[in-house]
Length: 187
Image (cartoon, rainbow, N blue to C red; front, side, top):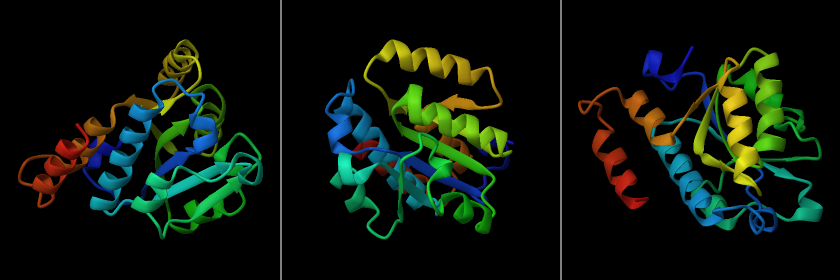
């Protein structure tokens, strides 16, 4: 199942992985990446899609970027030491309890935590769409290689606007104007 097959947000969640300031300092195009992840969070909230965050060893690497925290202050942040986000304590239980079947994924780093989360999710029979404009890493070549590889799996790799407009389905959707305003905000 792809998100745009149903134009529905039922059973879909957005997972933003390890967008911590200390890690972002070494990520190529981190300002652009943060902007795209902020857009994805606001778009998901507009469409009533649950938003989930992870932090990699936050006691050593610090918390997620405050811009993301401000956008979704009530969202649970799952701490982890594993590279796969699905191994964060409580995250998989939440997904199962909420009957989440499809994950929209963004964050860092593409060849490590994003990659291992996607592989783990596919093995657990989740459908996965990587928001490719919402992922980043230290070396862009590594990220491109991983996204090409993951595209050959059952995972979809698409830009965030493509996904959110696919969910809307058309200009007659009641939240179309709000989405258009949100997109203009993040140009």
